[in-house]
Structure formats: C-alpha cells, structure tokens
Image (cartoon, rainbow, N blue to C red; front, side):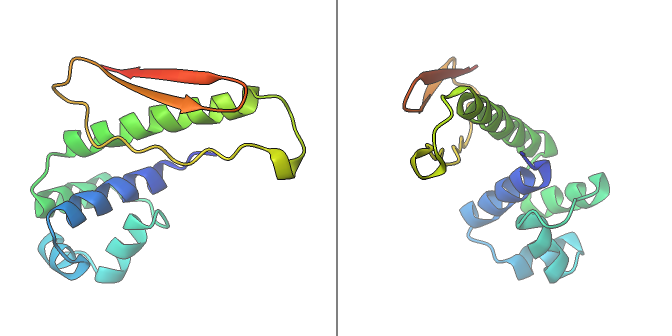
Length: 128
C-alpha cells in the first residue's frame, strides 16, 4: 500500500536537505516541535494543511510545488505497484523487487520518460 504521508515526508526532507538546513532550523522557523517535524518527514505523522503550510513557508517553497512532487511520486508508485501485481506469480525468493522511483521535478520539461522494468514487462511512464 502506498502511504501519502510517507511520500509527503520524503519530499519535505529532500527540500530541506537541498537547502542544507537542519531539522532544528526548519522546526524553529515553522514553529513546530523538532520531534513532530521529524515524524512528519519519516511518514509517521500526518501533516495537517496548516502544518504543511507552515513547513512550506519555513522552507520558502510553494505548497503547490511540494504537492506536485508528491503527485509525481504517487503516480510512479502506483504504476510500479500495478506492474508488480500483473507480473506472473512466482515463489517469494524469486519475486522481483521494485525499488522506489523518485522524480525531482518535471515542471517546465515538455516530456520526460521513465522506464520501470520487471522481469516480464517494461512500463513506460510519461510525465508532462
């Protein structure tokens, strides 16, 4: 099962790390406890819209950009999950393992193609 809170936390963590900022700096700026922000980033807590807005403001990033990245990752995760469920059922030790796919941004790019491969098929994902 794909957990939206985990995808959101991953995107928020990457945004913070790209800026070279610590959890302490962002939590202070967003006026949220360090522990709670850490749990949000690890996908252990659901962020309310108010909290998400405060974190985005602290990171100086638009909430729409964060949500776009989450949406892109959700689309890829759904495709990977779908591809995995349509592959031939094989014993557990031989079952293919799909690693999570991450897209930083496709905004402004006319077309970007990502291929998710499984032993029996390849799924092309076009993000525009």
